[in-house]
Image 1 (cartoon, rainbow, N blue to C red):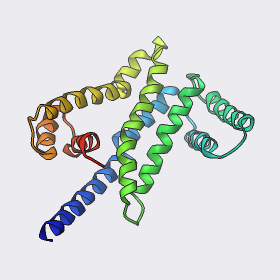
Image 2: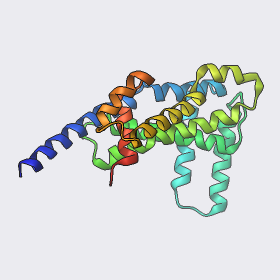
Image 3: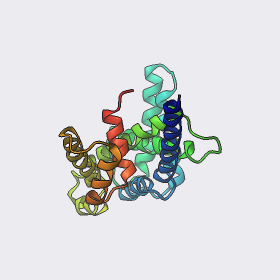
Length: 214
């Protein structure tokens, strides 16, 4: 009985720490938000309101049940609208990936800034979303990088590089964990946080997501 009470307290504290961590991760001036805005700036979209509307409409069109012909027509119209506002004209899939990254960030930002506390499902969604957002950002950067005129600017912004860097960090952390070098996520996170200049909670989340049983 005492063990169950202890585990409940530990879980509640971990849950609170996760909520606080994600509130920082998805706030309006977070690294993710800045990476998305840097990408929008790189593409050359000046009208932020138009960007917001098009990104949201692409997402809503995708999740709204409709016949294929209407879906394609709506999506094409929305993408053409944002493409016309872009200095760098991208392929359809790049705008769709940009929409996925932006709308996922917006959902997470809403979840952790509303008055009601997040649910376990919300926290699970936020954990998965971090990797998904950077995967989508990486897709867009990979598409743009073929234009040599903006290659140097892309590299300086670092969004594409950061996505690959996180994968490298994860590989090393997971490799050391599987060797049995650490007996707790927190100890592993403390050691690697200083080495890679990462928040320890980020590393704990990576480990928990990969190795914890559901």
